[in-house]
Image 1 (cartoon, chains in turn orange, green):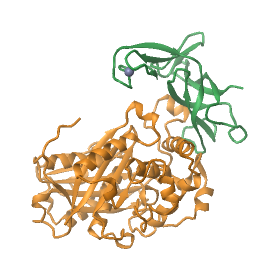
Image 2 (cartoon, protein in one colour):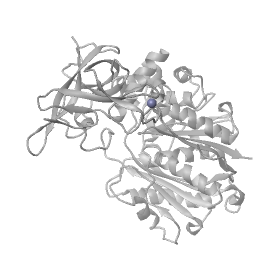
Image 3 (tube, helix red, strand yellow):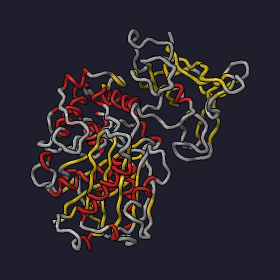
Image 4 (spheres, helix red, strand yellow):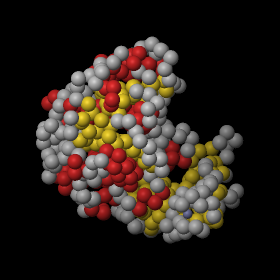
Length: 383
Length: 135
Ligand SMILES: [Zn+2]
């Protein structure tokens, strides 16, 4: 357990995204990340030389210190730079978790977090090259999600149609997000009738593999107004938890339950205050169990909320207005930072056509990953 | 004949095999494979146990995509979570089955068998364990 120390407030000063999608080989991860970083610096109103620490996250790039090659494009002014902070899908949200603490404790004022990826096509599997898993075909990400879906359906009586509805809703959102990989709307029938991948999950219930980049500038709240006149979005809660052995007894991810409890407590908010969420829907079922773990709906009712349209942009608790991993895409290292950028845009009222209505003030992100990691961030606009 | 992961599967030259696990004397949990500490309570007070070569299906999925480019197995294929009688759990492939024409369900009994995964440079078989539905 971490010690409870008095922390300074930390805000998201700037966000920058490179659209997610598939780009030709000559467009490298450096090109993607450079664009996201440039945009984040500009959005924050700072100069590159104001950055005091730069952190980079990726999972699959076959390069050591990949991030340093990105940052050195901007020049090296003697600050600490970290070439990779890797925690599976939670990589850049783990970097945010670290950066929030480095600023919060007063060691630094401005930290840049960037994440990018150019992913190979095909199923995402455990990276071990020589292992029983490789011969058995176990350890396939969508197989693990299929286990989750089957168990959830059994325990809570959810029909596959309710789970597949997540894909319908998220593709609808992605279609109006200029940064999304997929801008195509699907009917429930199209989702259910798409090619079977890992029974009961069909192709359109599994997120694509993607290229893309996201960057954030995080800043001590007390100096933020020096740089920007935009609404300030505070990282009011930030928690990282790992699955315990005993968690397997529960269908709902307990690492997220614990991370959410910690993050809400730090923020001094309850799940009832949350007006929108970006969660880890690598498969459709992920969104349903994660909104339950975040306390955004009662346990076992995520599928009902989905069926009733409550998680639509116009619903009572909009989830994945970006289109989520399903439609926005999932370049592993970029996703965590991308989720925080998305919530920031909504809390500022800058999310364009996909803007969650009602001038939302509190949003939450959840990013889970292979190995049992879950990061939760609670974002609150400072008025 | 040898095994892939000595910490969970012991293969005898005769072809007989044992699945290994630990039982924690502190919390009572039976856990698949050998580990430095109890995975449930981190106690070092545990005993090594041999698991029974049978269990039941705890969860399953039918995968319709080869998991990687070098895949030599069938497609579609079935992956199951197996629960042993003492409560320990592992994940492996359910073999010798045509998933399109066979009923698979949670709770169905399985037995554990050995399969050759590969051969090493000297031609010796490297074995893995798989599950098979009990008739
Ligand atoms: Zn124990």
